[in-house]
Length: 299
Image 1 (cartoon, rainbow, N blue to C red):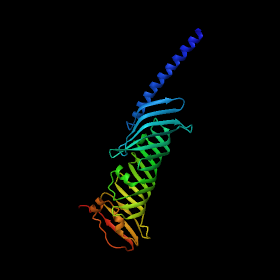
Image 2: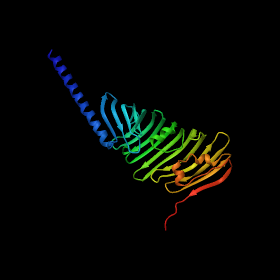
Image 3: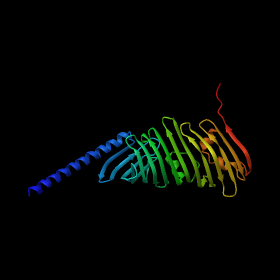
Image 4: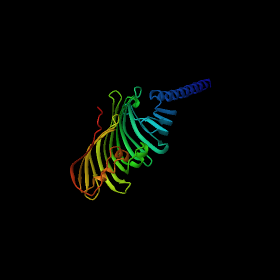
């Protein structure tokens, strides 16, 4: 009888030690995540479910250049593939003071102490906006460097305009690839894009299909269009390339049975007014047509 009492006492004591250890471990992890991410990621609570599962509640992800994400719950488990973890969870994303449902599912590996992360295929679905596939890497949890490849799968441009407060005079559905490359040490911040816009329509009701490829230098606020094409569905097309920045622009066109005005109407009104861009007329064909404005330097 004494043996059983002693064994029961040992089991109760061991259970108490384990529960206490888990409690303090969970509290430590909550504080540690907040500290190493400089409060960009905060967690209300963490529950450890042996042997390999973490359940997080009320996860806030907040970076200045991106919309705030709030995950009601997030499950993380070890995948036994290197130092990798799979995660998934429902939540919401804040867009212009409004909220939309978001679902995230993916995996991540790397050195969590140094904040060097390798984001493997991660799927994000945002209400009304569309679905995305994201992969890439972060340096010091994104503070020192970000390299992301984002695949768009029918993203609604109308919702993108709301997210980034863009004044674009058209709507449509975008598919293609965005590559974000940011490095604090190299003072580099660019986004490459190779996008197809289907069902592109203007306020006047005109409908087109557009293809555009280029680079947006975020720091210099300059967009280089390497290759662009606008089709009207009736055999007409406009080929274009060039650049536009905060002071100057240079755009080259080649039109085929399509008015140049159709393309220029897709340029935001504030930019058209700033550079005094105005073209009207019928359907003509032109080659090597160029519009350029260079701000004169004061002597």
